[in-house]
Structures are given as structure tokens and as C-alpha cells.
Amino acid sequence: MQDVLGKSETDDGCRSISGCASNRAAMPFTVELPDDFVTIPASGRAKSDFLLVSGNFGTGGGTTGVSTLSVQRAVAPADAADVAALAAALTAARDATTGYRTAVLSDTVRVEDDGRRITFETRTPLATGAAEASSTFVRHGLGVVLAQIPWLPDAPSEAPLLVLWAGAREDEWVDGVGAKLAKAAATFRPVRDS
Image 1 (spheres, rainbow, N blue to C red):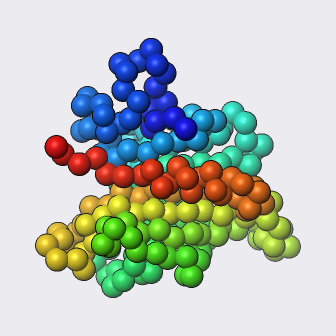
Image 2 (cartoon, rainbow, N blue to C red):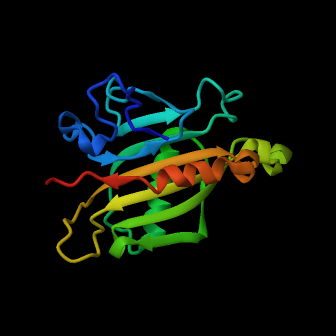
């Protein structure tokens, strides 16, 4: 796996975003990306909440064959009463920008790290009708939320969140890409001030 910036050994010697003092302000997280992933600068897009966009863009077969991992800055909706509602609200907000209808797989919603890490899986049909049933036209996804969750003590009313979104075509997810993306997502951590 490579670090979030994909630095080579000839760079400043920093192999982890959390170890690079110059990057702490720009990237409040660390994540190890799969070796075949490249990153696209997110800073150039106007009004983008995405801090990182990465994927196997050069090796994927068309839009649906590309595996991706991105990190988005978000705010916990005030009406999210529990983690399942939070996962659904974040997914719906993302769908509002993509036009898809993503479902959170409710039996996959998990709370970890005393409520400061939430994971869930999603399923997104990329076509309608008969094609919707084919795993070739469905993306399986993984969401990981790092947060000061609003219902925890001392959390701000509009809690800041970092959301990692990873996904692949469902047939590829089952054939091993899902495990690769889950491994990368497991390295997703906030950068803590020392």
C-alpha cells in the first residue's frame, strides 16, 4: 500500500500523511491506499468538500469497473438520532450530488472506537430495469465516518465529520476488491495534534 499522497522514496522521506508536518493542516487524516491507486488533486474543484479522490483509474474498465476511495468533509445532520440514521443521511447527501439511489445495508452498520468511528456498507444500482439485477451494474461500497458524533457528551451541535467512501463493481467486490478496499479503510485515522 502507498500513503495518501503516493509519495516516492525520493520525496521528503515522509511515508505517512500524519508524519508530514507540512500536510497536517491540509489533510486532517491518514490512510494507506492500494498500490494500484492514483490520486486526483481535490483542491482544484470549486466548492468541493472532497479532500481526497483516488482510484485505479488507469486500470479500470470504464466508469463501473473503476475501484475508488475518497474522503469527504461533512457535517452531522442535526436530525440524525442514531448511527443508522447518520449513515442514511450522509449517503442521501452524497446521492444528491451524484443522482444515484444508494441503499445503506442496515445489517452492516457498526460503531467502533467509543462511537467515534462508524462503518457501513452500501449498494448502488447504476442502471434500472433488468440491468439493475446484474452485479455488473451495481456498485458495492463502504463508508467509514470519523467523528465527534452529536449525541456523545461535549460534541458540538454541528459535529465535523470525515467520511471515507470506497467502492467497486459488486462482482469485483466479491472477487477480492472489497477486501482490498476494507484493508485500506481500516487504516483511515484522524491526524491528532501532538
